[in-house]
Image (tube, rainbow, N blue to C red):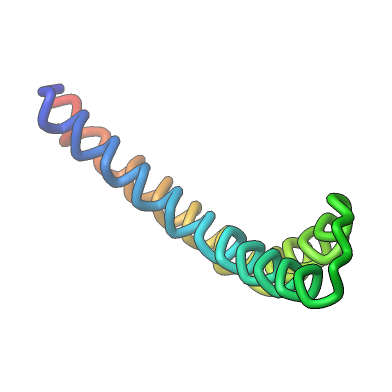
Length: 89
């Protein structure tokens, strides 16, 4: 294994991780922004107010995007397993 191969595998792994985490982070960010706007409008300064909506949104996103996320991980793993003879040799 050359350093270029290891670098390519690391880049692909980071790309897959970003693809998997992006829907969760973006939805959580959107809900956080909406709750922050609500807090600013009503002058409620409760720190824990954002927790439940964010948690609910993360659960909903995982339920909706979970099968796609699992398929992305499976495809990446299978591609990596098929490349093992080429990577070793």
